[in-house]
Length: 395
Image 1 (spheres, helix red, strand yellow):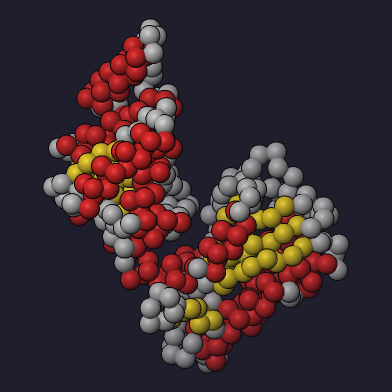
Image 2 (image 1 turned 180 degrees about the vertical axis):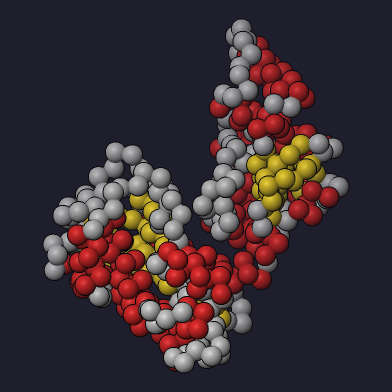
């Protein structure tokens, strides 16, 4: 790794940015922990290579020379920082065409926060790109475009005959970094829970396959901000043709339902799904989650209502969002539609009336007096999601 670039970053440190994705207030970023970092290239330009493979299972990233150099830098990250008193271990890494994944463990308390390591790595990559590939000091368009007197460097990075798009070279020349420069700087996740590390390592290694599926099924992973369904407005992603399916069922299971009640409900739901029904569910209670899991595992189509599942409109993560884990797999197969109601839906007169009636009925069943609750309360939102699922399934 470029020692000069890394040392420069140690001297010229950036203050901690509390707007970073997943940043945890009060967390000691110098202490022992395991982190997953995602570092996107500016404008998501495929600076490191291309995705290849004849199927999702055989998908892989063919790294160009710069991508391979970045990969080597990641592999040597722990050894480089060991000389500076940082005890680190790289658990897994993946260089994708337009971003980098890194799962790293802090073995002993650090001299500085883990953010200094990430920023140092990013600075070193930019420095190498400038010096060895970008041909610093020359016009960016000439460096990567036709008529470049030193076009051999462009060929090294982008492959024979490939050229960087003009918009990317202009952005890079103006900002001086190859990395995304939104307020998030990079995405981080601290791995706390048991089993989370194994799942994250599997996720990182699975990135080429997931990208292959996403690029071959773009419509199934496109975020729609204004999906109108029966007069209600949603943010959505997935197979919108499921909304047109005539045979539908809604799944709602009380939190107090016992195991045999859940299993009985599951049998009726699976029977209807087997006969062609699309299932609408908010998957909130444990019973609902159990049924949704069974439907998903057997490949039956579902429309899932989300309380707060998508990035906020205008956020730096909106453009590249994709659902995680099992939802991604279901989306890629066209078996899932995710719907997140807008705030206007929760304020809809019909939905409000149905929610208050449901809550009133539950209070009476427990011999309690009922006082209407605010439409902004969490409990209201949970009940409303089920009422919305019911409404969509019968109209």
